[in-house]
Each structure stands twice: as structure tokens, then as C-alpha cells.
Image (tube, rainbow, N blue to C red; front, side):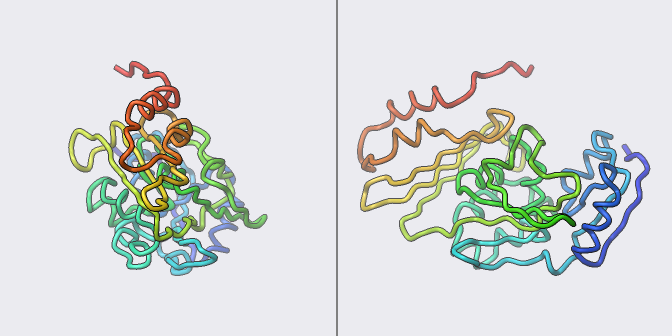
Length: 261
């Protein structure tokens, strides 16, 4: 299977990439890791006229802390983030989720921001972004804007990103000492797309659950924040029997199952 014809450009800077993207309009598509885009092109589900490769830009290959946020640039590979000391120390959910993303070979090429921009409803990273209330920076020749993860994901493979914008970084709040995280999913085999998954992030005050965030993925066109479950968990003690209450809350939060056979 081969993609339809396209032009390929490899700009030397972000400003040059933005100029090219602005001039190509709907024909231009940004390439970072290509782990989703290239297969889609091969199956002719995506037909960009111009492929703009930002994968080699050092200015986008950055991981740093700023204003109590972990900032991950658009060029950072998933494997880099998974093993990065700053990520491991400040954002537990990311390396836990990244272990579930595809196979090692995919993570060696795929990028954190690329997964967010792709917005696959079965993907782990959009769910993590929603659970952590992360934000992304979108840039075009018109300027920069900060978009919350709640506003970013519009539907399956659909985001708030405009045709002339590039996601230049993702910003995850730094964990506090009481932060605890669980990432789990069901898949047929290791490395397969998740059938369904869950992100749980809480703060603990002693043994009391505070500020719980619960996100399910693979169950709807976008990851779903289970706010009724969060309300049921908030203020509960770890040893309390809250299973029935949480299960009932989950039923009210989750969409009705559909038959995709």
C-alpha cells in the first residue's frame, strides 16, 4: 500500500514551518513522529498535499519545568519522555501511560504531542492530559494560544487545532507529594490498541481522597471524565467500602455501549 503523491519539506526552524503551513492552507500537514500519519497515508485515509517535517528541530526537542508545569516540546519522542528523569520525578502518570503505548519501536519514533494532536479515542495520552488537566500551546503565524485538554478534543481524531497551527508543546501540572496515579487498560495483547482503559489520579490527605480525577478511554469518541465517580470518591477514606457507590456512579457517567460488530 502506497500513499498518494505529496510534496515533502523539512524546514530548519519553527518560524519557517509556520510560514509554510500558513501558505499551504488545508494541503499542509505536520509530520513529527509519523506513527499514525504515515499508516493513514498508506491506506489513503489521509491525503496531504504537502508534508511538513518538524521532527529534527532542536527548539522543539525540549523537556523542562516552568511555573509548576512540566513542559514537553513537540519533538520529544515518547520513549524519551518515558525514561526522562524530570518526567519520572514530576509527572508519574506519563511514564505509567507510555508503557502501554504501542511497542518500543513505535515509542522510539512517536511523539507525546503527536499523540495528543492525533486524538485517537483509544489512546492513552489524551486521557492522561484530560485527567491531569494539562494544556497545550498552539502556534501559527497569527500568534500563540494556550488550550486546555478539556477544550482540545472535539471528537474521534478531531481537535481544536486550526489548519495553520502547530502544537509546539504540552504542559502537565507537576505532581505534589500526596499525588497517586493508576493507569490500567484492557487489550488483546501487549502493544495492541486498548479496548478500554482508565486513568485514576488522586491526592491523599492522610487516608482521605482529595481532588480525584477519573478518565476512561476507548469507550466514546473522546476520553471521558467520570465526574460522578469523582464526586463519589471525594472525601472517602481509603479503607471505606465505596465500591458499590462508585460502580453505580460509573454507570451514570459512561455512554451507552454500542454494537461495532
